[in-house]
Image 1 (cartoon, rainbow, N blue to C red):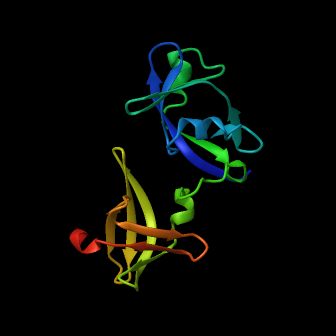
Image 2 (cartoon, rainbow, N blue to C red; image 1 turned 90 degrees about the horizontal axis):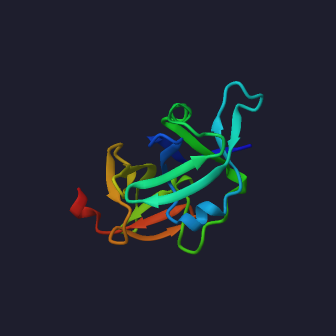
Length: 169
C-alpha cells in the first residue's frame, strides 16, 4: 500500500462514538467513491488498519463520521488527531480542471513568462487553500489558490502559470 493522507479525525463528537473529521476532498460524492480507508496501527504487520465509515455527514466546518465498531466516546477518543489514509493507487482520477495537491507540489511556477520558483507546500487556512511558492531567491510567497492568481496548470509540462502576484509582494 502507498499511504496517502486524505483527512484527519479531529476529536469525539457526542457520547455515542461519533467523531469530527476534516477531509481534504471537496465533494462528498468523491469521498464515497473511495472503497477503503486506513489509520496507522503499529501493532499490525502492515502498519495500517482498515476502518469503515458507517456514517459521513457534511457539517459547516467539516464532517461528522461514525466508524464501524466505535460506539462510545472513550473509543472515539482513541482516534483523536489520527490521519485518515487511503491507498494512493486506488484514488479516483481527478476530473477536468481538478488536481490532487500532491501532484502540484514541486511544479515550476511561471510568472510574466519567467521562472519564478517552485510550489513547495500548501496550507489550509479556514476554508481557504494557500499555495506556498519558494521563489528563486529562496524566500516564500503565500498565494491564495484562486482563479485570480492561478492562470493555468499543466501537470504534463510540470508548471503552473500565475498572475497578479505583484499585489501579494
